[in-house]
Length: 447
Ligand SMILES: NC(=O)C1=CN([C@@H]2O[C@H](COP(=O)(O)OP(=O)(O)OC[C@H]3O[C@@H](n4cnc5c(N)ncnc54)[C@H](O)[C@@H]3O)[C@@H](O)[C@H]2O)C=CC1
Ligand SMILES: O=C(O)CCC(=O)C(=O)O
Image (cartoon, rainbow, N blue to C red; front, side):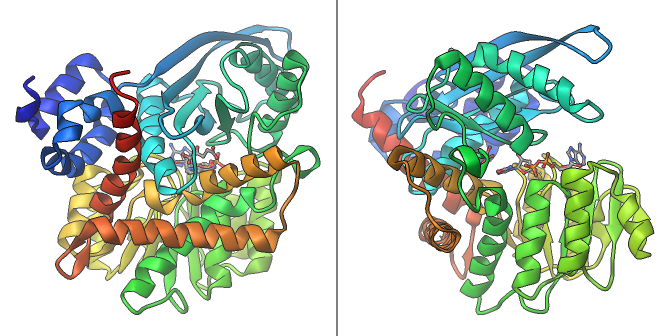
């Protein structure tokens, strides 16, 4: 392709040819390319050095066999991955996902998104993502431990505190990070901050568990404040009931919002009175400790449980915090017709492209995940700083820094996304995230 002829259709055709069948990766790139190509066209240095083509090709991908033994003594085999996407502005950084749906397309979409997200945080972190098609659901602690140790026995060759620093994502929380950190330490014979999301006893950071969800609530607060509005008194629909959803709900309640739903893969609970801190504590125990089904909440508190997703519940604010493509075009139309004012994504790419179009046409505030959920990786970056200093900062200090980072991300989105009297947060996040990484890549020459 002649670099002067860069256009979206040509670009996507080439990408699809090079990455056949990777539909989630195509979707993530399409969304970024649609907003970045006009900017690249206007800047010869990016066009000539084919930066966008280079940014859509991971630096490297490692795929490996993970063998472990279940409690009955059966040999089990899974596939492990680490996609090291881009280290132009810092060491590779991004979570690990353990879920049966994990494949290369999903990890490439997540690693690609991470490039822009990590750039927006203002911290020196590159991008990566990894995981395995392992399902921790229903496994004993001993089985999860054996899997994590086997996974790390290969992964440790490829990571390091200044090379690649994985963290959690779906199916990977404090328990899994602890097993993996223990195994890394044993193999590498060193104690360094090679993973984030660690427990406080061995180098973890206060607020990291809460950071993604809190950050998402703060991003919504920023979008509303920009329009002279706030969260107080607003009805909030949240999907998911994992780490991100629960702490997003917690901060929304603290800010005066009324959270009326949470969900898991079996369905959602609708509590019209709203969750309070006591009900949320019960939910934390159910989902984060006992790992039970969400319908138990409805039985316990006498509210309703429904199959499917929560988007038809009337709300002012919506927070998709479960997984990719969980909010589709029809759901977006329902949100609009119910008078929803804003959507802020705790999950990565939870809204399909046609659904985003519906939200944009209705001029609903829409905060894409790479901006709205960047609080998690930002506090991971702060965990790395604390590990390097061998110090631990206070929760008050860290929450203040998290809030400041979210304010900075919002400012960058407004700077690059203002369209008349409306902010297009997709364009803003994509262009702002792109510039820093692209400038670094241009500076390095042709590598
Ligand atoms: N943990 C973190 O720090 C960050 C996570 N994210 C994103 O947030 C989302 C949630 O992640 P976590 O809360 O960490 O994971 P988690 O494992 O703690 O919770 C995942 C939640 O999503 C639900 N879920 C998973 N697959 C589903 C499906 N197919 N349909 C409906 N619900 C489903 C689960 O029931 C659970 O409630 C993911 O998209 C993840 O990539 C984004 C930034 C940082
Ligand atoms: O904290 C991290 O490094 C990972 C966060 C992550 O995976 C994400 O932002 O999607």
